[in-house]
Length: 429
Image 1: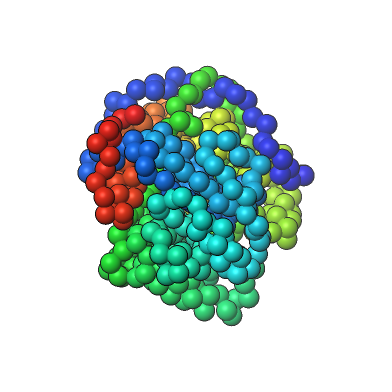
Image 2: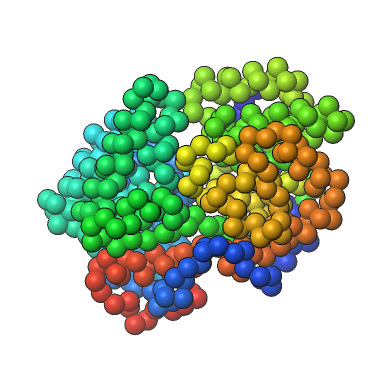
Protein backbone atom coordinates (compact mmCIF):
# COMPACT_ATOMS: atom_id res chain seq x y z
CA UNK A 1 0.00 0.00 0.00
CA UNK A 2 1.46 3.32 -1.06
CA UNK A 3 0.91 6.64 0.70
CA UNK A 4 -0.01 9.22 -1.96
CA UNK A 5 0.59 12.78 -0.74
CA UNK A 6 -0.45 14.39 -4.01
CA UNK A 7 -3.68 16.28 -4.44
CA UNK A 8 -6.53 13.87 -3.85
CA UNK A 9 -8.45 13.18 -7.05
CA UNK A 10 -12.11 12.99 -6.13
CA UNK A 11 -15.40 13.23 -8.07
CA UNK A 12 -16.88 16.68 -8.54
CA UNK A 13 -20.38 15.60 -7.64
CA UNK A 14 -21.17 14.93 -4.03
CA UNK A 15 -24.07 14.32 -1.71
CA UNK A 16 -27.64 13.75 -2.88
CA UNK A 17 -30.86 15.48 -1.97
CA UNK A 18 -29.59 18.20 0.39
CA UNK A 19 -31.47 21.48 0.48
CA UNK A 20 -29.43 24.69 0.53
CA UNK A 21 -32.06 26.63 2.46
CA UNK A 22 -31.86 26.76 6.27
CA UNK A 23 -34.94 25.57 8.06
CA UNK A 24 -33.97 23.49 11.08
CA UNK A 25 -33.30 24.63 14.65
CA UNK A 26 -29.81 25.83 15.52
CA UNK A 27 -27.16 23.37 16.61
CA UNK A 28 -26.94 24.51 20.20
CA UNK A 29 -23.83 25.75 21.95
CA UNK A 30 -22.50 29.29 21.74
CA UNK A 31 -21.36 29.15 18.12
CA UNK A 32 -22.94 32.48 17.15
CA UNK A 33 -22.61 34.40 20.40
CA UNK A 34 -22.20 38.15 19.88
CA UNK A 35 -23.24 37.83 16.23
CA UNK A 36 -25.98 40.43 16.56
CA UNK A 37 -23.66 42.82 18.37
CA UNK A 38 -21.45 42.89 15.32
CA UNK A 39 -24.12 43.50 12.68
CA UNK A 40 -22.73 46.93 11.87
CA UNK A 41 -19.13 45.87 11.34
CA UNK A 42 -19.21 45.49 7.59
CA UNK A 43 -17.88 47.47 4.66
CA UNK A 44 -15.07 49.74 5.71
CA UNK A 45 -12.43 50.45 3.09
CA UNK A 46 -10.31 52.28 5.67
CA UNK A 47 -9.89 49.10 7.74
CA UNK A 48 -6.64 47.44 6.69
CA UNK A 49 -5.22 44.35 8.38
CA UNK A 50 -1.81 42.71 7.99
CA UNK A 51 -1.79 39.01 8.91
CA UNK A 52 1.52 37.41 9.93
CA UNK A 53 1.58 33.62 9.81
CA UNK A 54 4.41 31.11 10.30
CA UNK A 55 2.66 28.33 8.38
CA UNK A 56 5.07 27.05 5.74
CA UNK A 57 4.15 26.07 2.20
CA UNK A 58 0.34 26.34 2.37
CA UNK A 59 -2.42 28.77 3.21
CA UNK A 60 -3.65 28.18 6.75
CA UNK A 61 -7.40 27.53 6.80
CA UNK A 62 -8.26 29.69 9.82
CA UNK A 63 -6.15 32.62 8.62
CA UNK A 64 -7.00 32.56 4.94
CA UNK A 65 -10.37 30.86 4.42
CA UNK A 66 -12.12 31.85 7.65
CA UNK A 67 -10.73 35.35 8.24
CA UNK A 68 -9.09 36.94 5.20
CA UNK A 69 -11.48 35.88 2.43
CA UNK A 70 -14.71 36.71 4.31
CA UNK A 71 -13.25 40.06 5.48
CA UNK A 72 -12.51 40.97 1.86
CA UNK A 73 -16.23 40.59 1.13
CA UNK A 74 -16.82 43.30 3.73
CA UNK A 75 -14.40 45.71 2.08
CA UNK A 76 -11.44 45.12 4.41
CA UNK A 77 -8.01 45.46 2.83
CA UNK A 78 -6.00 42.39 3.83
CA UNK A 79 -2.30 41.65 3.52
CA UNK A 80 -0.82 38.24 4.32
CA UNK A 81 2.86 38.06 5.23
CA UNK A 82 3.85 34.39 5.32
CA UNK A 83 6.20 31.83 3.79
CA UNK A 84 5.28 31.62 0.12
CA UNK A 85 2.45 29.28 -0.81
CA UNK A 86 1.59 27.89 -4.20
CA UNK A 87 -2.09 28.08 -3.21
CA UNK A 88 -2.12 31.87 -3.64
CA UNK A 89 -5.44 32.85 -5.19
CA UNK A 90 -4.63 36.49 -5.82
CA UNK A 91 -7.47 37.77 -3.60
CA UNK A 92 -5.42 39.33 -0.80
CA UNK A 93 -1.99 40.81 -1.14
CA UNK A 94 0.42 37.98 -0.37
CA UNK A 95 3.93 38.98 0.61
CA UNK A 96 6.33 36.02 0.70
CA UNK A 97 8.59 35.77 3.74
CA UNK A 98 11.46 33.47 4.52
CA UNK A 99 10.29 30.58 6.64
CA UNK A 100 11.49 27.64 8.72
CA UNK A 101 9.84 24.25 9.01
CA UNK A 102 11.26 23.73 12.49
CA UNK A 103 8.91 25.34 15.05
CA UNK A 104 11.73 26.47 17.35
CA UNK A 105 13.58 28.18 14.50
CA UNK A 106 10.39 30.04 13.58
CA UNK A 107 10.67 31.99 16.85
CA UNK A 108 14.02 33.35 15.69
CA UNK A 109 12.68 34.10 12.21
CA UNK A 110 9.70 35.99 13.64
CA UNK A 111 11.50 39.34 14.36
CA UNK A 112 12.57 39.58 10.71
CA UNK A 113 8.93 39.38 9.69
CA UNK A 114 8.17 42.26 12.08
CA UNK A 115 10.72 44.48 10.35
CA UNK A 116 9.11 43.62 6.99
CA UNK A 117 5.60 44.27 8.30
CA UNK A 118 6.21 47.53 10.15
CA UNK A 119 6.45 49.51 6.89
CA UNK A 120 3.09 48.28 5.58
CA UNK A 121 0.10 50.68 5.71
CA UNK A 122 -1.99 48.45 7.99
CA UNK A 123 -4.03 49.64 10.96
CA UNK A 124 -4.14 46.22 12.66
CA UNK A 125 -1.37 43.60 12.73
CA UNK A 126 -2.97 40.20 13.26
CA UNK A 127 -0.50 37.53 14.42
CA UNK A 128 -1.12 33.78 14.21
CA UNK A 129 0.37 31.13 16.51
CA UNK A 130 3.00 31.44 19.28
CA UNK A 131 5.92 31.69 16.86
CA UNK A 132 4.75 35.19 15.94
CA UNK A 133 4.78 36.55 19.51
CA UNK A 134 8.37 37.92 19.18
CA UNK A 135 7.25 39.78 16.06
CA UNK A 136 4.28 41.13 17.98
CA UNK A 137 6.50 42.42 20.79
CA UNK A 138 8.60 44.38 18.28
CA UNK A 139 5.55 45.73 16.46
CA UNK A 140 3.88 46.80 19.70
CA UNK A 141 6.75 48.03 21.87
CA UNK A 142 9.16 49.42 19.25
CA UNK A 143 7.01 50.37 16.27
CA UNK A 144 3.89 51.28 18.31
CA UNK A 145 1.47 49.28 16.16
CA UNK A 146 -1.96 47.90 17.07
CA UNK A 147 -1.40 44.17 17.55
CA UNK A 148 -3.85 41.25 17.81
CA UNK A 149 -2.63 37.79 18.74
CA UNK A 150 -4.58 34.73 17.57
CA UNK A 151 -3.94 31.40 19.30
CA UNK A 152 -5.59 28.88 17.03
CA UNK A 153 -5.41 25.89 19.37
CA UNK A 154 -4.44 24.93 22.91
CA UNK A 155 -0.73 25.25 22.15
CA UNK A 156 0.55 24.66 25.72
CA UNK A 157 -1.28 21.31 25.76
CA UNK A 158 -0.07 20.54 22.24
CA UNK A 159 3.53 20.72 23.41
CA UNK A 160 2.89 17.64 25.56
CA UNK A 161 2.30 15.51 22.46
CA UNK A 162 4.87 16.86 20.00
CA UNK A 163 7.02 14.00 18.70
CA UNK A 164 9.84 16.34 17.67
CA UNK A 165 10.41 17.28 21.34
CA UNK A 166 12.13 14.94 23.82
CA UNK A 167 9.53 13.75 26.35
CA UNK A 168 11.47 15.18 29.28
CA UNK A 169 11.28 18.76 28.02
CA UNK A 170 7.68 18.74 26.74
CA UNK A 171 6.20 19.97 30.07
CA UNK A 172 8.72 22.81 30.15
CA UNK A 173 7.92 23.69 26.52
CA UNK A 174 4.23 23.81 27.41
CA UNK A 175 4.91 26.16 30.31
CA UNK A 176 7.05 28.44 28.12
CA UNK A 177 4.32 28.67 25.50
CA UNK A 178 1.73 29.39 28.20
CA UNK A 179 3.98 32.15 29.57
CA UNK A 180 4.43 33.65 26.10
CA UNK A 181 0.68 33.69 25.47
CA UNK A 182 0.03 35.26 28.86
CA UNK A 183 2.59 37.95 27.96
CA UNK A 184 0.72 38.54 24.69
CA UNK A 185 -2.58 38.87 26.54
CA UNK A 186 -1.05 41.48 28.85
CA UNK A 187 0.82 43.57 26.27
CA UNK A 188 -1.09 43.35 22.99
CA UNK A 189 -4.28 45.18 22.03
CA UNK A 190 -6.31 42.06 21.32
CA UNK A 191 -6.20 38.33 22.10
CA UNK A 192 -8.18 35.72 20.15
CA UNK A 193 -8.82 32.01 20.66
CA UNK A 194 -10.75 29.33 18.76
CA UNK A 195 -12.79 28.15 21.75
CA UNK A 196 -13.68 29.32 25.26
CA UNK A 197 -11.48 26.79 27.07
CA UNK A 198 -8.37 28.04 25.28
CA UNK A 199 -9.18 31.66 26.12
CA UNK A 200 -10.04 31.00 29.77
CA UNK A 201 -6.46 30.97 31.20
CA UNK A 202 -5.83 34.52 29.91
CA UNK A 203 -9.36 35.91 30.01
CA UNK A 204 -8.50 38.39 32.78
CA UNK A 205 -4.91 39.15 31.79
CA UNK A 206 -4.11 42.75 30.96
CA UNK A 207 -6.38 45.21 29.21
CA UNK A 208 -6.36 43.51 25.81
CA UNK A 209 -9.69 42.95 24.14
CA UNK A 210 -10.68 39.28 24.07
CA UNK A 211 -12.56 37.31 21.41
CA UNK A 212 -13.55 33.70 20.80
CA UNK A 213 -13.55 33.22 17.02
CA UNK A 214 -14.87 29.75 16.27
CA UNK A 215 -13.48 27.73 13.35
CA UNK A 216 -16.91 27.27 11.80
CA UNK A 217 -17.31 26.52 8.07
CA UNK A 218 -17.15 29.23 5.45
CA UNK A 219 -20.29 28.42 3.46
CA UNK A 220 -18.67 29.57 0.22
CA UNK A 221 -16.86 26.21 0.27
CA UNK A 222 -19.87 24.10 1.27
CA UNK A 223 -22.94 25.63 -0.36
CA UNK A 224 -23.04 23.75 -3.67
CA UNK A 225 -23.63 20.04 -3.12
CA UNK A 226 -25.00 17.66 -5.75
CA UNK A 227 -25.63 13.97 -6.36
CA UNK A 228 -22.71 11.54 -6.18
CA UNK A 229 -22.25 7.82 -5.52
CA UNK A 230 -20.77 7.02 -2.14
CA UNK A 231 -17.33 5.46 -2.61
CA UNK A 232 -16.62 5.07 1.12
CA UNK A 233 -18.55 4.01 4.19
CA UNK A 234 -16.41 6.06 6.59
CA UNK A 235 -14.27 9.17 6.26
CA UNK A 236 -11.77 10.64 8.71
CA UNK A 237 -10.12 14.03 8.17
CA UNK A 238 -7.34 15.50 10.29
CA UNK A 239 -4.08 14.48 11.93
CA UNK A 240 -3.25 10.81 11.35
CA UNK A 241 -1.79 9.71 14.67
CA UNK A 242 -2.44 7.62 17.73
CA UNK A 243 -3.38 10.71 19.80
CA UNK A 244 -6.00 11.68 17.20
CA UNK A 245 -7.65 8.27 17.48
CA UNK A 246 -6.52 6.92 14.10
CA UNK A 247 -5.46 3.61 15.64
CA UNK A 248 -8.78 3.34 17.50
CA UNK A 249 -10.55 3.71 14.16
CA UNK A 250 -8.38 0.99 12.62
CA UNK A 251 -9.22 -1.32 15.53
CA UNK A 252 -12.92 -0.58 15.00
CA UNK A 253 -12.63 -1.39 11.27
CA UNK A 254 -10.97 -4.69 12.17
CA UNK A 255 -13.80 -5.51 14.59
CA UNK A 256 -16.32 -4.80 11.84
CA UNK A 257 -14.34 -7.04 9.50
CA UNK A 258 -14.65 -9.90 12.01
CA UNK A 259 -18.41 -9.28 11.98
CA UNK A 260 -18.47 -9.63 8.21
CA UNK A 261 -18.72 -5.86 7.52
CA UNK A 262 -15.93 -4.78 5.16
CA UNK A 263 -16.31 -1.03 5.69
CA UNK A 264 -14.40 1.06 3.16
CA UNK A 265 -12.62 4.00 4.81
CA UNK A 266 -10.96 7.16 3.53
CA UNK A 267 -8.41 8.75 5.87
CA UNK A 268 -6.86 12.01 4.78
CA UNK A 269 -4.67 14.54 6.56
CA UNK A 270 -1.12 14.89 7.82
CA UNK A 271 1.30 12.73 9.78
CA UNK A 272 3.88 14.14 12.18
CA UNK A 273 6.85 12.90 10.18
CA UNK A 274 8.08 10.16 7.87
CA UNK A 275 8.50 7.65 10.72
CA UNK A 276 4.92 8.21 11.90
CA UNK A 277 3.62 7.71 8.38
CA UNK A 278 5.62 4.50 7.99
CA UNK A 279 4.32 3.19 11.32
CA UNK A 280 0.72 3.90 10.29
CA UNK A 281 1.17 2.12 6.96
CA UNK A 282 2.73 -0.86 8.70
CA UNK A 283 -0.13 -1.07 11.18
CA UNK A 284 -2.70 -1.04 8.37
CA UNK A 285 -0.77 -3.82 6.64
CA UNK A 286 -0.43 -5.91 9.81
CA UNK A 287 -4.17 -5.62 10.48
CA UNK A 288 -4.96 -6.81 6.95
CA UNK A 289 -6.88 -3.60 6.22
CA UNK A 290 -4.97 -2.61 3.09
CA UNK A 291 -7.94 -3.40 0.82
CA UNK A 292 -10.34 -1.34 2.95
CA UNK A 293 -8.38 1.80 3.84
CA UNK A 294 -7.42 4.59 1.43
CA UNK A 295 -4.80 6.87 2.97
CA UNK A 296 -4.08 10.33 1.64
CA UNK A 297 -2.26 13.51 2.55
CA UNK A 298 -3.74 16.97 2.94
CA UNK A 299 -6.58 18.12 0.72
CA UNK A 300 -6.98 21.71 -0.43
CA UNK A 301 -9.79 23.50 1.38
CA UNK A 302 -11.50 24.10 -1.96
CA UNK A 303 -11.71 20.31 -2.38
CA UNK A 304 -12.79 19.57 1.20
CA UNK A 305 -16.55 19.36 0.58
CA UNK A 306 -16.46 16.97 -2.37
CA UNK A 307 -13.84 14.81 -0.65
CA UNK A 308 -15.77 14.46 2.60
CA UNK A 309 -19.07 13.92 0.83
CA UNK A 310 -17.86 10.75 -0.87
CA UNK A 311 -18.58 8.88 2.38
CA UNK A 312 -21.71 7.86 4.22
CA UNK A 313 -20.43 8.56 7.74
CA UNK A 314 -17.78 10.86 9.22
CA UNK A 315 -15.84 9.91 12.33
CA UNK A 316 -13.92 12.01 14.85
CA UNK A 317 -12.36 9.44 17.24
CA UNK A 318 -10.15 11.86 19.22
CA UNK A 319 -8.57 10.62 22.43
CA UNK A 320 -9.03 12.28 25.82
CA UNK A 321 -5.69 14.10 25.96
CA UNK A 322 -5.53 17.66 27.37
CA UNK A 323 -5.59 19.37 23.96
CA UNK A 324 -8.79 17.66 22.84
CA UNK A 325 -10.41 18.34 26.20
CA UNK A 326 -10.28 22.03 25.26
CA UNK A 327 -10.49 22.38 21.47
CA UNK A 328 -13.66 22.07 19.39
CA UNK A 329 -12.92 19.79 16.39
CA UNK A 330 -13.70 21.76 13.22
CA UNK A 331 -13.91 18.50 11.24
CA UNK A 332 -17.28 17.79 12.87
CA UNK A 333 -18.86 20.98 11.51
CA UNK A 334 -17.30 20.51 8.08
CA UNK A 335 -18.81 17.03 7.93
CA UNK A 336 -22.22 18.34 8.96
CA UNK A 337 -21.89 21.02 6.28
CA UNK A 338 -21.61 18.16 3.77
CA UNK A 339 -24.71 16.45 5.10
CA UNK A 340 -22.86 13.63 6.88
CA UNK A 341 -23.84 12.12 10.21
CA UNK A 342 -20.89 12.25 12.62
CA UNK A 343 -19.67 9.69 15.13
CA UNK A 344 -17.49 11.54 17.62
CA UNK A 345 -15.65 10.88 20.84
CA UNK A 346 -17.73 12.14 23.75
CA UNK A 347 -15.49 15.04 24.81
CA UNK A 348 -16.60 18.22 26.64
CA UNK A 349 -15.96 20.75 23.84
CA UNK A 350 -18.12 19.03 21.21
CA UNK A 351 -20.73 17.34 23.43
CA UNK A 352 -23.20 20.29 23.62
CA UNK A 353 -23.48 20.50 19.83
CA UNK A 354 -24.83 16.97 19.35
CA UNK A 355 -28.27 17.76 20.78
CA UNK A 356 -28.99 14.27 22.20
CA UNK A 357 -28.14 12.41 19.03
CA UNK A 358 -29.89 14.67 16.55
CA UNK A 359 -26.80 15.09 14.37
CA UNK A 360 -24.85 11.90 15.12
CA UNK A 361 -23.60 9.58 17.84
CA UNK A 362 -21.16 10.07 20.73
CA UNK A 363 -18.91 7.22 21.92
CA UNK A 364 -16.47 6.79 24.75
CA UNK A 365 -12.98 8.03 23.73
CA UNK A 366 -10.56 5.19 23.00
CA UNK A 367 -13.30 2.53 22.92
CA UNK A 368 -12.94 0.77 19.56
CA UNK A 369 -15.85 -1.59 20.33
CA UNK A 370 -18.21 1.32 20.92
CA UNK A 371 -16.95 3.01 17.74
CA UNK A 372 -17.50 -0.19 15.74
CA UNK A 373 -21.02 -0.54 17.18
CA UNK A 374 -21.87 3.06 16.24
CA UNK A 375 -20.56 2.65 12.68
CA UNK A 376 -22.52 -0.59 12.29
CA UNK A 377 -25.68 1.06 13.64
CA UNK A 378 -25.60 3.84 11.06
CA UNK A 379 -24.57 1.57 8.17
CA UNK A 380 -27.51 -0.71 8.92
CA UNK A 381 -29.90 2.25 9.30
CA UNK A 382 -29.26 4.48 6.26
CA UNK A 383 -32.50 6.43 6.71
CA UNK A 384 -31.53 7.38 10.27
CA UNK A 385 -28.02 8.30 9.14
CA UNK A 386 -29.39 10.47 6.32
CA UNK A 387 -31.75 12.26 8.71
CA UNK A 388 -28.85 13.03 11.07
CA UNK A 389 -26.75 14.34 8.21
CA UNK A 390 -29.57 16.48 6.88
CA UNK A 391 -30.24 17.98 10.31
CA UNK A 392 -26.54 18.67 10.83
CA UNK A 393 -26.24 20.47 7.50
CA UNK A 394 -29.29 22.58 8.21
CA UNK A 395 -27.82 23.58 11.58
CA UNK A 396 -24.59 24.69 9.90
CA UNK A 397 -26.45 26.62 7.18
CA UNK A 398 -28.66 28.36 9.70
CA UNK A 399 -26.31 29.21 12.53
CA UNK A 400 -23.01 27.42 13.02
CA UNK A 401 -21.09 28.98 10.17
CA UNK A 402 -18.52 31.67 9.47
CA UNK A 403 -21.10 34.34 8.61
CA UNK A 404 -21.60 35.23 12.27
CA UNK A 405 -17.96 34.80 13.18
CA UNK A 406 -16.68 37.29 10.62
CA UNK A 407 -19.08 39.95 11.91
CA UNK A 408 -17.69 39.38 15.39
CA UNK A 409 -14.14 39.68 14.07
CA UNK A 410 -14.76 42.96 12.24
CA UNK A 411 -16.43 44.41 15.32
CA UNK A 412 -13.43 43.23 17.35
CA UNK A 413 -11.00 45.04 15.02
CA UNK A 414 -12.93 48.27 15.54
CA UNK A 415 -12.89 47.82 19.30
CA UNK A 416 -9.13 47.32 19.48
CA UNK A 417 -8.73 50.43 17.31
CA UNK A 418 -11.14 52.36 19.52
CA UNK A 419 -13.20 53.56 16.56
CA UNK A 420 -16.82 53.23 15.53
CA UNK A 421 -17.75 51.00 12.57
CA UNK A 422 -18.05 52.64 9.18
CA UNK A 423 -21.54 54.14 8.55
CA UNK A 424 -21.81 52.25 5.24
CA UNK A 425 -21.65 48.91 7.06
CA UNK A 426 -24.14 46.27 5.99
CA UNK A 427 -25.33 43.24 7.90
CA UNK A 428 -25.41 40.78 5.00
CA UNK A 429 -23.16 41.71 2.06
